[in-house]
Length: 202
Image (cartoon, rainbow, N blue to C red; front, side, top):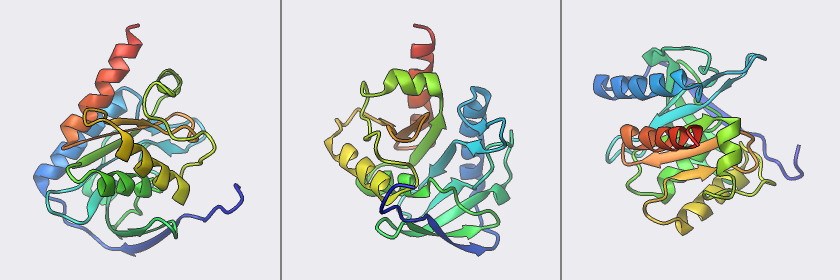
């Protein structure tokens, strides 16, 4: 591991959470679109990839797909977790749910903290798209690994410098990783699908 690397720490309260039915349906609707495009899924070695989150208006917490859920075509409410707190410096999140929150939760938190009107974050994996977008879109340093405090910090620094209409971040040190955000789930998802289809048709 990188020198100075702080292991991701998840303080997990394992209990059922209540997700508003409308929010759950929105989550599943956009996740299905991303799953069908292969932007969320599971690698042959069994490791899942990609996650989505939503931050209800005026809420200080957010709902995110749970760890190791990429393999499933459809999720149940029990596959989601609520992130109720985090500490970038300590690489720690607090979450509640029947499933642990994704290890990428700090990247999502970094966006929400930096963009007050962000209501959703989508994190996808796609090697060919990642290679095309690298340094053509806001990109974090290739030296910074995912799941580190440095990645959360790098995302925040990028966001502060981005133009208002820029809503996509390439994770330079996280092979295949791309983040998109928006005021709601549809906006964040449409942003990444629009770019995916544009480059696919080149």
